[in-house]
Length: 256
Image (cartoon, rainbow, N blue to C red; front, side, top):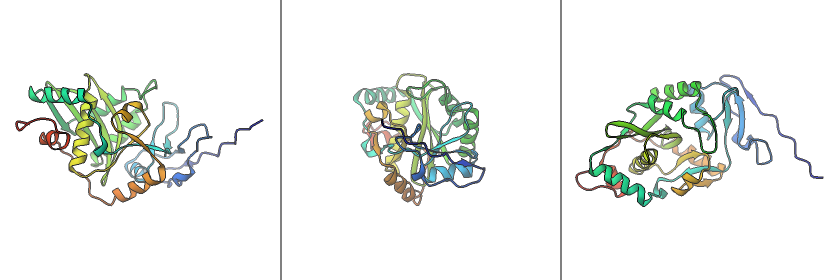
């Protein structure tokens, strides 16, 4: 009879304690592959330390803070982003009628609260608990978290938020109140990243939706190495100009 190997103890972090090496994260035979540690705090220095090492927090109500470093990692290279024909037509139509505006950091708190009401694929409830909202809002005020917002007819229709350290962008969550609104925000993010030479966006979780738009799996070791090198590069300028649609996604005309 084959026996399941025992699970290694999960490290408990005290506030300010350094993270264990990501290679110590639970593996495929453990109950939660990629789980690295529990405990700690969600302050700005801890979040920066985590993302700088390819680690992110993800936990549910009633659980302690859980820290993850999955292997492989879902990533989306902006140069490989696939803009499907139907979405291209939607964006073009909205631009032609001057109904679409993409805004950056116009209302970060409203975006993250809307994301908190949107479950991740295949899950019920939310993982963006009030403590997470507060933590990422502090990170935003420190200049290291940003919202990309789709405004249609003057209303916030959808969007997403990310963490940004150096030339590395870590996607967190998105929401839609109108059809394709979050996809439009993602397309805008890809155009902004292309503009500033961002070569990789972390997506954390493997989903069919991201794979259909160009996402792919990347082993953890090269992902972590990419993060290290990207941290040495300057951060992009977080603004979106209408000309980016044409220059980087071939959408629009001279009026745009």
